[in-house]
Amino acid sequence: MDAAIGGEFLLEEGFATVNHGAYGATPRAVLAAQDDWRARMERQPSRFFNGTILPALRSAAEELGGFLGARGVDIGFVGNATEGMNGVLRSLAFAPGDEIVVLAHVYGAVRNTVRHVCSVSGARMVEVPVAFPRPDDGEVLAGLAAALGPRVRLAVLDHITSSSALLLPIVEMVALCHARGVKVLVDGAHAPGQVALDLAALDADWYVGNCHKWLFAPKGCGFLWARGDRQEGIHPAVISHGYGQGFAAEFDWTGTRDPSAWLAVPAALAFHARLGGAGLMARNVALAASAAAGLAARFGTETGAGNRAAGAMATVRLPDGRPADRARAEAVRARLLAMGTDVPVMVHNDRLWLRLSAQAYNDPADFERMGALVTQAVAAV
Ligand SMILES: Cc1ncc(COP(=O)(O)O)c(C=O)c1O
Image (cartoon, rainbow, N blue to C red):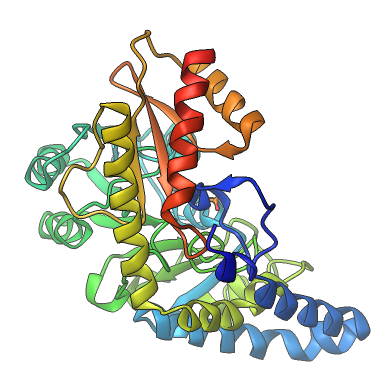
């Protein structure tokens, strides 16, 4: 771990933390800002909930909008990306025979939400295959184009996929769907703070993101952005007093809860900027790429993204000749955890793959150490 930057976090010493993408890690400075908000809330709850909270939320949304290339008024805070995706998917009306397109690499919880929406409406989920490893952007776009038949009402597209860590050509994908008259809900759970974003330019219909992954916000901090003309009829997963009073009002109040993670967004943005902002994102992307290449060379295997554009997460095939299944993947991961590191271990095409993440506190030695432990774990399990 980079000693100077590692000290800004609470991360356990001696553990090779190379899995930032899973849950993020919150810096001490941001936790302190969150604590300040909590103290204000608890010192005088009436004043806080009757007066302070709403302008503070709107001001945090404005600052977040500035970072995302969006207007604050088009942003509603949610507890996490899952909640944001639920808000949109469960607000839209689908009829029997309608189709909802998802990518084959869609996040499991989002796939479940689409399955639920289909089961109550009679709509059908259509999956776009994604080749792996080293998918070609043109192939992904062609697969999407082929799925956009006349019954498709919505495309649910990942900006960065979860288990395969693919940075997808989201601009082209959104444009393709719109050219076919299909609305787009983007699952950008991993994108904010990992790659540059300009939501106004992207012009999707809805974009959901997390701030608690790559933007250093405390856990429980996600957002839903909705284009101005796509806000009507979109409700948070929990309906409360703001019902019918406009997009921002509906999301600003979903019952009494601790909003301190949302209110700490300005502190998280300041931390991200202090560590370099765009420079930090570029540094993390480069570190992930070199770490993945180094591991693939060490293992004698391959990387999932190849030379295509990627973010700060990468996948590498494990050095394992045995048949791969979920149970073996879990056994390897459990062994790694006991040995002092953690990486998601997935099955792709009957082979085991790991996903690594490179964040500010990582240095190349973290990935070398993880690689040595992976070799041992695979041999031992
Ligand atoms: C692509 C994608 N979507 C959604 C989520 C859900 O994020 P959260 O658990 O913060 O709701 C994740 C989590 O890793 C993800 O990778």
